[in-house]
Length: 503
Image (cartoon, rainbow, N blue to C red; front, side, top):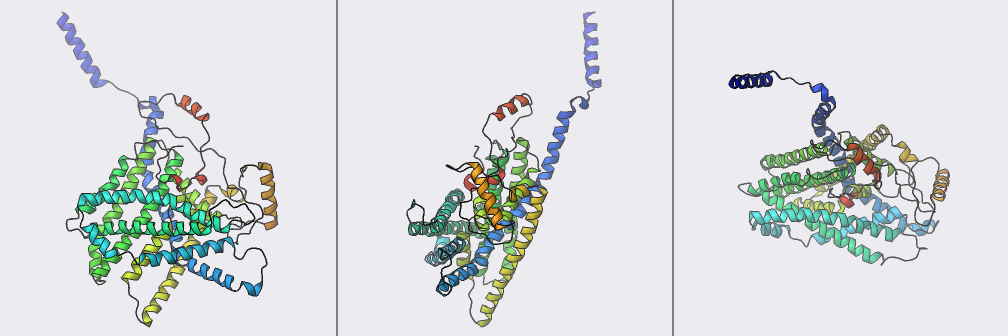
């Protein structure tokens, strides 16, 4: 009898298992969230590439500025300095601060270009090629780390030089002098250019290796980056820093690939057939970089509950930099703001590219010089067209993000020793004297120092909550209220270029 009951119980259990039902709508919120995560991962490639596309053209604009408008601005500044006795001193400044910075950039560029002639590219190539594959892999990783570290410190050196050279003379001397800062800037640009040259040479050796093993190892290094990023806690500001770093890294890789192609084409006497030999490797490097960025950002946003709309905010913040640099009260040049935001410093890269182009392409004859002039005019046209399109798109992004109030009515924070109310009244008076702000007019020198533009809004908080720990969300959010206020996106710069620092 007991065996019969056991059989009946077993049959009942099996029947229950076969016919048991459940209703997903009883936990509708959970499954809706899972579906939204899938949709977010599907949207990441599109939104990320839109940000990358916009950021790369921002870097291109700052890079073309060094070759096109900077020489013309240096010429105009020197012309003003030479003809200054003819017009007399209308104010106490011989040159405007922007003109002093332009001359310093031009002089640094020329000096470092001539210093690069003492670096033998061919000897460096054969020295690197004689090393083993594993040793080259370690060298390339060390160069990437060194590039990030030296970039984070290099813009500080340049900013210190610009401020030391343009600081009002009536202030108390609190620096070591313009000349020491100038030599530090020249040394930095020269060393950074050599570092990028070693990177380009290592990449060139990888392209020319017979079995392509080194190129494969270098590409696999990008996938190691995924392991070091996706399992860390990221907030919205930290993801913005990493996105800027990825934009800078991708643009720098494009320039390095251009340098590699130029050197290889020179070795094969500019045979166009060899370009098609390099084309598959170039596409493979670019495709691996894009794939790694997409996978990395997709999983970071998934693990930290960040929506894909955040990339539109990042794009609007980059557009805000461009539009604000065109105002009357602009406190920096746009190329310098790109350097601070992304860690992209165009001077060392421009020095190296000029050195490679002048050594690879020989200009002989009148027709060759005419082609050089036409090419320069084409670069200027490309720069102007790119700037116009970027300015139009930036105004559109700023308007869509509703950031006009931050642009024309910034919230000012008090500097040490001066109350906020007095600063706001000073800002209003100077704004009334200068008239309405414009994005195309020249900056006006102001008597009082403009305080930095800071936005006091708190950024959204994001928590990494695994699937099995979906409780105590309200408790965690209440604890976050007692933390210090996070920085606004407009305050994030390249000081945290590695993208992993949590404030």
